[in-house]
Length: 252
Ligand code: ADP
Image 1 (cartoon, rainbow, N blue to C red):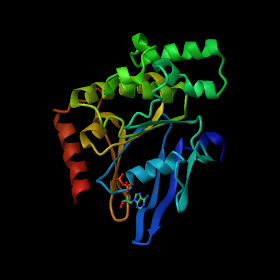
Image 2: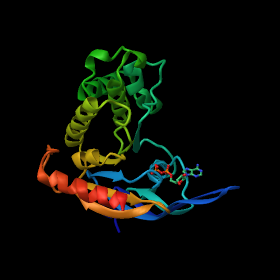
Image 3: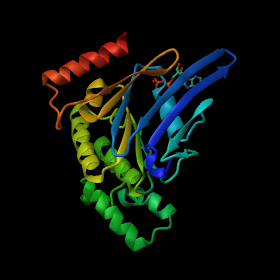
Image 4: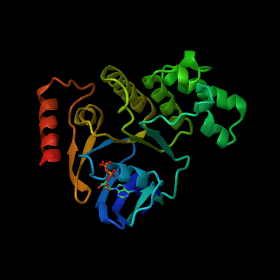
């Protein structure tokens, strides 16, 4: 097999058990799937189906008790420049400006000041925050903070953008705007995106494919390809059919 035959992400036989004096919880059991380069995949599932645990394992923040995760054929061994992470809680550095936040990963890679500035400007333009380069996170709305977090994640040009409920903390209108912007950025950059959400409507709006998880133990129930042209209308009959189907899978 040559390197080019590997999928961007391969999740292979992942299991995660938590042992405690109160007993053992099998958070994930035998979870396997691939994500192809350029694909937009959403993971949905009820609370307790192991979404967060799976996210943390793919990000290399936590080890599985069995199985492996690989990125372009190489095992994931911890957060690195080939992964861009976006969390619900932004995790911005409050003492850094918007520019300083976006440029953080480039500084760590010793990218020179001029090149860093060029890249930061380009990213702020991409997320529509050119006018806020010198602002601090405390002066931004939730939606703007999440745009900064997205620009920061994209700065080092990661192979995979891994997002955990990134729009879970903003109001419904901002959420829709951010979804549309993310789709534009995805189209423009060709990034591979793996996006965890409990919001079925969001998953159908965004994804090429939705992976539906089930509980006890956390496992993959089904892969649902979303075959609707973008931009997608929530009021279309097809959208409604996917919605019912995925909701049924989650609730049954
Ligand atoms: P989801 O994100 O889908 O709600 P989680 O990954 O948070 O699911 O949790 C899956 C299961 O694993 C749950 O039963 C949860 O209680 C358990 N779990 C998650 N993290 C831990 C932990 N650190 N210690 C013990 N049990 C855990």
